[in-house]
Length: 168
Image 1 (cartoon, rainbow, N blue to C red):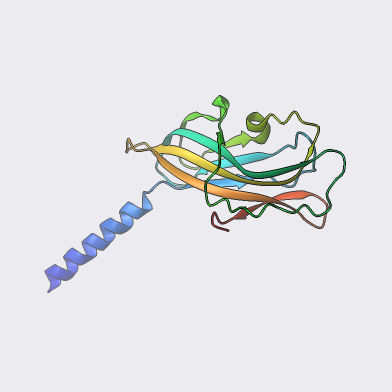
Image 2: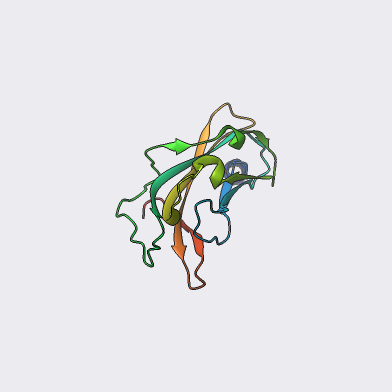
């Protein structure tokens, strides 16, 4: 009986250790911004685990975006589509590609690098997904982690990026 309990606890310990070493990537959006043609928007990607990551490629997917051209919409109505982790296209400029990201390191991806917004319109509304493609250093397997952000104007008149589930 003791041998069976010891064997079972060893298996549970190994499973817990394996889960601990799974790569963990996070994405955080920049703080509030003013609506403008070239808003100072950044996304910070971090490796929050002890396992180094390689071949990191953030991808910006535009699910919906609304621009105004001189007449600000006080209550922009977002489209009724659901992002669901999918986008019609992904933007990934070459300066967003990184070869290695060690434990607790961060990289920053700038909206302007990807969108190159040269229109005179200001951002009223945006629904985007950031998908991070990476490889754990010990596996030759590419993994993907997707995060969704939606803009929303709060009481201070500034636009904030709010995290949203992929399915809503």
